[in-house]
Image (cartoon, rainbow, N blue to C red; front, side, top):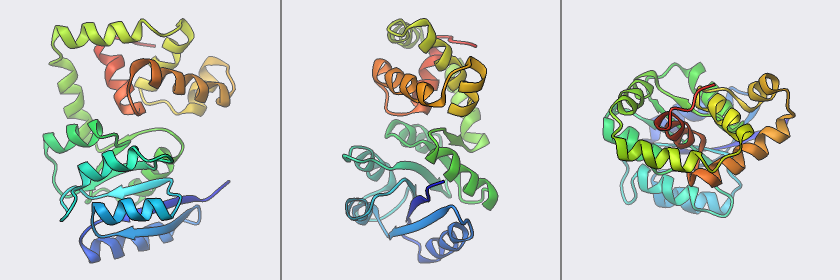
Length: 218
């Protein structure tokens, strides 16, 4: 298995040190870069191939939301996990809207942070339970125009792609989808890529939200 190349982006030196110790404890994660703000993160991502970046929200010069959008726009974009002290609705929505694949609080159990790095690197998503709850609440409050727009995009998919989307929306990994639908994992990855393009979204979390808006179920 290839190493997961990680980057820590946080303006607090002690937080960076703690996260570095945590990531270094995992033999499958290689911490290749650290940054104290969003601008440094962009520079480091240009100098190193990063698979997963752990990005704080509140930082000087360039905040984590802006940095996430900039990182995701790079030619070889890293996956991003927003890791913050502040559990605020707007942070959750803004981070995911910018392209983050995960949203965790800094008081998350260390084992769960490591698990999140592995899941996101593998193409899945990881949300703090509170963030997930708020997204579900937002889904239940979806207005009719949003649902209509989501349904129009979902209608672009083939029946098989809808099957994949439904399982993706409930949080299944590519491997789990492959097993359930009796497909090769490489085929699932190809379907997921096509789904993201058809739905005009940048990651699995946004695709899952659109699937829920369109009431796509397994």
